[in-house]
Every structure is written in C-alpha cells, then in structure tokens.
Image (cartoon, rainbow, N blue to C red):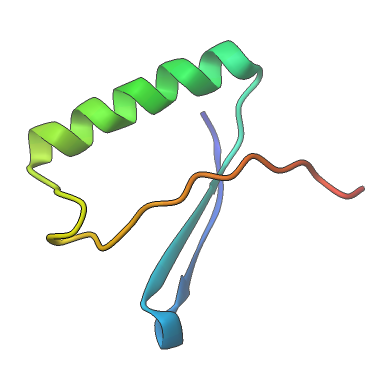
Length: 61
C-alpha cells in the first residue's frame, strides 16, 4: 500500500494520512492489518486518540 502523503492540521490537532490501494480487497485486508497493529500497540480511541475517520475518495483528475 503506497502512502500518498501525510499532513498535520495543528489548529485542529489532526493528522491526515492518505493511502492508496489497488482494489477493495487490498483495502479491507490492509485495514484489518492496521487495526490489529493499533490494538497491539495499545492505542485506544478516546484515550490517546480522540477519534478516527476513514473516508474513501477518488482523484479528481
């Protein structure tokens, strides 16, 4: 999964991570892999992470 870019919106205390996938199956597999890594690291929503949003988008060009 290539990481397209990362940004920080300091005013809103946000970290934005843009990734791309070859297809829906890869997106779902990588999502599960990521969630397992988050759980293993002890990251808890509402604790050290207030919330997480996942949005599917497509390029405008």
